[in-house]
Length: 543
Image (cartoon, rainbow, N blue to C red):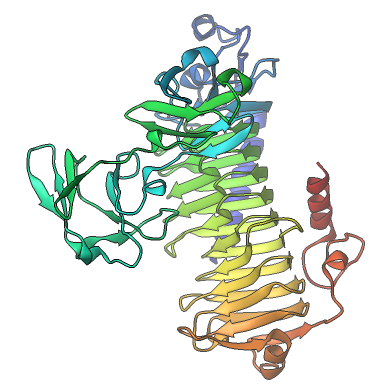
């Protein structure tokens, strides 16, 4: 049996189990109502509604359905199946959200703050993680390594306990003697060779690992202060330190003029361990500091239907380790990565999804070669890296960067064992990237004009890339080589040069092709994504 057949077999068995579970046994419906429910009463009498989802989870048995009641009050809750035994074959545990939204943030009332220093306020009861929600806008945490000036140092306990130094312009690390005092009374002279590049917005900031929180610091014999982000907040910025949150309101505004919400819950739905046989459906998640839907461990037969998330600190949906998941129907927007499946074994099946406005990657697969993933019927819109994957089979994908989107967007970043067909890409800054470990087959593609380059980090692209039935617009360049400077050739010329290659079949450039023609559903091409997918994209843009 091939890997693809294995995936289809497992998915079919999961769907069959859903059907069997709905027609046999004596499943109990456990109702949750966040207004009228009572966990104590419902635990004794399951015909009564629970107030919290997790109380219902604790008593749920194989075949039971946990049903959430939509009320006029937001569900400030999560659904955590940690430690639960799970369902049984044909008798999954079902969580039916009925369109409810789980919110991971709590409102910070103006009364809960105290003044830290002029124009900056602090609180310790509701400390946000990763992002702070201010008037429905997500604000990233201010980091000390982004605010230090030349010659200054800082320590970031919230960022892997790293020490940072802003090396003055036109200097090198070896120009400075840096000695750091440690809590046990010892001192450490930093080795200039061990400074590393950092994630700072400032190009000359370097990091040093392996230190405890400094008690003092000397640079070239002079004692210098450790800089803290809380002392340099700009208007409408925030940070946290030692379990205290600091916020400076926008210029000219008081705390009462803005709505502030702290992200205090990590995941909307969490499955982990060796649990199996779950159905999660009709549920929305927002404002969690980690993932909307988080699956870890060796979870098997986990089916997610119409499960959506937005404004998450990390992923909208993320499956890890040896998990096996089916996700059918989802919209993910404004997360760090829309979907990120990072299995080291197991599988993921993803279909009928729309992913937009991610801060990093739209659809991300990281695999070591033993996990298997499929993607079907996907619309990716305005993600800096739209699709980045290995060990994937994909069918019917539309990838769009819209006019007015200010960030760059790479359509396809493809690694080992990728087969993708019926794909349309329009408006992206860069069309594709493949590397020396890639093995990519792409067929039936339509690529709009002006999408930068197909970049192959190899001596000859045909060693890692097979293209069949591809229609492309003009102003796209094939770029290749093992190192800079790259070799380049217009894509139509490169197609012509390789027209006799079995790796490049029926590929051509149509200089009259334009983007507006490609993404109109009633204009069909013999290849590319379906008209139904284009209609889904157009509907998403109107909403």
